[in-house]
Image (cartoon, rainbow, N blue to C red; front, side):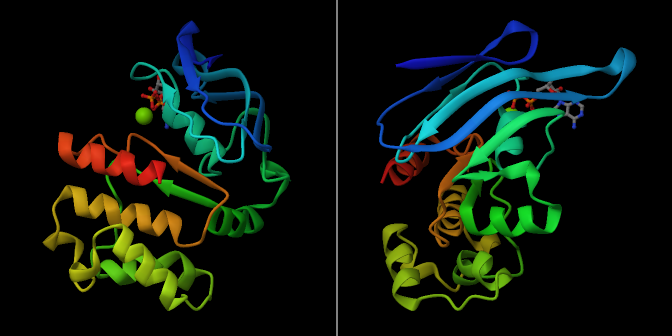
Length: 207
Ligand code: ADP
Ligand code: MG
């Protein structure tokens, strides 16, 4: 089924629903304004929806309809103007900034269109970086399992600059998965990839 939520200028953001178990994410009357006066942009206007655990949803809408704004708010990267976001039982914006940062690091995986790998770190170091930030020791079995799944075993010592777009995005997917997050947010994750790498990335995300 399709769930439509209203973004900017009455353009609709469509959330496609797949499976169902229990509520993981609830967005209530989310509003986000940018600028003031003549420059005011109402990027999100009273967006409400919820997602269940295990659900795979696509947010669809034309450029400028507020998709990135929505994902950035859910991921705690941007502050909403008003409204509530509950993720995994936590009221995201009731947490102070340091707590929200820790919550985001542990519970949310974010995949961006432009990868944002750290250029000085190799594949394996980029993969485990969220754990290092959290002072956790990576489980070597988990690291090997992910490198295998992502087809990156023989490239673990490569720097991002030595990889093309597809493998770079696979590293970014691994980095989003390493902490076993409750929610993975991906903002146009295949926007910089060719057709073959696009279908590989989508297959990996579904797995
Ligand atoms: P999408 O990801 O669907 O293309 P965005 O969420 O990036 O849409 O943008 C929604 C609207 O908010 C657009 O009109 C955009 O110009 C505006 N916008 C996004 N970010 C900012 C910002 N930092 N400052 C001002 N306006 C912004
Ligand atoms: Mg966008």
